[in-house]
Image (cartoon, rainbow, N blue to C red; front, side, top):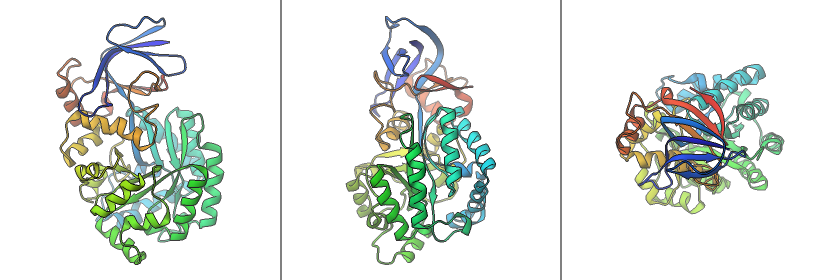
Amino acid sequence: MRVYKARILSFEDPSSPKEYRYMAVDDDGRIAALSNERPPVGGELVDYSGHLILPGFIDTHIHLPQLHERAMISDSLLEWLEKYIFPAEEKFADPEFAREVSREFFSGLLRNGTTTAVVFSSSHREATEIAFEEAMKSGIRAVIGQVLMDMNGPEGLLTTPERAVEDIKAVALRWHGFDGRLFYAVTPRFAVSCTMELMRAAAEVAKEMGLYIQTHLSEQIGEIEEVMRLFPEAESYTNVYLKAGLLGESTIVAHAIHLSDRERKILAETGTRVAHCPSSNFFLHSGVMDLKAQESAGLTVSLGSDVGAGPFLSMLEVLRDAYYANVMNPFKAFHLLTMGGARALGMEDWIGSLEVGKEADFVVIDPEPLAGPEDELEVLLSRLMILGDERNVSATYVRGRKLCEG
């Protein structure tokens, strides 16, 4: 048992955080007690006085192979993919390169306070296996999938529906549910690069094996126009995924900026989750997601860095852009970052907040020099949201185990 002392905040309620001074974590990495007085349990006192303890940050959309492709300016999403991203992802055919970048990637996430990440790997089965191996070694919690494409891309990144199913089954059988911490996501890149046959095959194997699904939706107008050219029988981009069987409660679609009310209704009725990626949207000038419209339609919204179109591994920096995109108080912003991510993954019963019985995923934050640790809460979190970054992360824990120290 360890007892942590700090200003401890949890964001189950987006309008009113809960606050404590002590948190006890048992030897299984679960929260045993939360209180304002030291709980009557034995064990080591870990004194983080002057610091904040927050629930671990959850990044629900990020690309591992694009780690080194950040800040590559281009006129459009499709041009950016062809000019920078596809060539970068082809390099992951080299296992040594894939391992080196994977190790750097997960280390970087932990340094930035991210305890759970939903990850696009490359199109290579071996590189995806390596990503799982490095995630396992790092101790992070992750959902990872091999990117699927069978058209409109370089030959080295393309697959077939049959080979895609074979690859998914082989990797998912080994890793989905590993240690209750690693999971597999079936990952068609987006409708521009996937035939209906591939998307349907992917959806079927995901349903058969109980896997997550992740893809992109309605990021840019040019992308939408290309999807409608490729699938003229569909009434909308969202309808393409509906016909393919890709939508549902285990599916996260990234971006979802340019949606009609009918498309939002389809996403809500199927229980599909949305990963809001404001930093990426600003960088590629894709548009601004209307958070109020999404939530009014009943959608579950979380936050994603979308590295490499997104330039930041730090979810604190993503929070700043989320505020610029949609005015919100910091309580709501940190709720989206923590409980929003947990709900998107269906993991809200064991992560996403600091509550007795949940697994102890948390990040230790040094608020100085941005603010004093005892400042008024809204001011403190506002400064952290707008000015914070990796330098404010003092330590990152998953299941009560310290994985990174700043």
